[in-house]
Length: 324
Ligand SMILES: Cc1cc2nc3c(=O)[nH]c(=O)nc-3n(C[C@H](O)[C@H](O)[C@H](O)COP(=O)(O)O)c2cc1C
Image 1 (cartoon, rainbow, N blue to C red):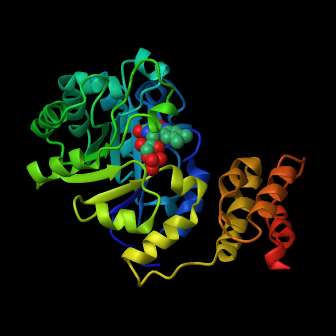
Image 2: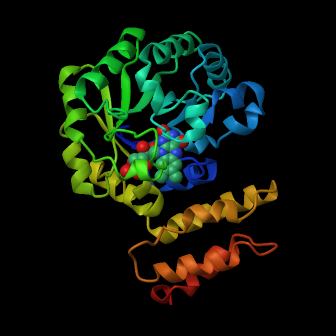
């Protein structure tokens, strides 16, 4: 299938965008840049790097998201990751969780742009793969454009050319990570202004994009749009977007996507992967369609059973009233 441009991206989402999820989403969107879950540099340097970095070739274009603030570790992790052939390595400067703050990385690093810039330089020395940054528009009481601009300028000096910006601030104390994705208001205008002030940068906007028309509109102002929760809960949205921006790409039927997943699932099961760890990402495939509930329910009720395999997907299709 023809690859469309990279102006669409699927967000890094811990526990969600693992390699099985990404394989599935790639069937719906041949061109979107997919991001891994965040992996800490320490996990790669001190842990089982293969386990964290392994992926399916079909997932390209694929970005690895790294978390960390120690330039030496970030560089070592980059060097190992580069051998795996990722298309981009992205630094997480947007995640507000406590665990991440205690490790000194994530959104709190927006307050120390020099540290992120040092990481960037150390990483880019290791590879020609583009190193990029994903941040918020601000943190806590630094809810102003100048703060974002200062952060970005430090990274531009270090050589960074692509920024993904989640268009809300992060509140580092008092809000859960989940609340930090809904409570601070979206401010797309601040991201547009960044693009106006630095037209040579590649600016990708993220946050709250749930409709094709909306994505169309933001792309009048910036270079790319990153979709998070909507891509997970309603993955067919990606097929609609892909078709909208690249009409030459036909929309696959949902049933065809299920069929394409079956050989993949069979191969994975043969290596010991539990069925549920793949099928759980497919629950939203029929969201908004007749039979969506039957699909979801059949899989949820059967996926945990001993010996569960790809036939459950066929049975789930048959359990849908519209398919009868
Ligand atoms: C379950 C979940 C896990 C997430 N994990 C990460 C992560 O590992 N790294 C990151 O930069 N952002 C993470 N995010 C934030 C998303 O990448 C994205 O910025 C956010 O959901 C806003 O986009 P949306 O409104 O399209 O969902 C996560 C979001 C969710 C819902």
